[in-house]
Length: 256
Image (cartoon, rainbow, N blue to C red):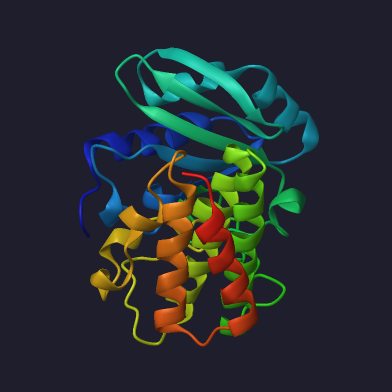
């Protein structure tokens, strides 16, 4: 068995600490603290779920985060980032994010790659739930959604709404392109994240196929971003001449 990094082993220390409470059923590692521990490095945080018997125990753990002391070290900063949990930074640089659930709450949640760091003998982790797929997950959908994102975004740019234009052109349209990359039979992804398509996309193969620096040049470059993304779409996929012509017209009339 490969030995876990020292920092990640602190999650085992926390689990040992929590195991003394009969109301705790399990500690689950997620992300690089889950089954893909080979990804854990000096830049990783620790994401985990705490599974407890009932809502009373959950309320107790939510109300007083002193139990985080089981990691070792002192919490320097924390805040409630979700009704079910917190994010916390320790004085020594350890950053953690956690959520607390009862078994009934955990069962329907979409998550993947969880690792049982510790659990009571009766605890059984149900088969991993994957992130919900889009209602329509086809090449045709993602191509046309990206095109219409560009169209709407350019109109907002022309109206002077640069921030929302940036999101449509450089975020929403690019998200659809990442979906196309995922669906392409020629793509090889390094440990794809089912919840966040941008993770490790730079190491996707073939890497040269996606000019991200041109597609996401920043707030002041919406027209250039739209032009490059449209070019990429028309070079790699069949596109409707009507919407492409409409987008090109907006690009031509777009203010710098």
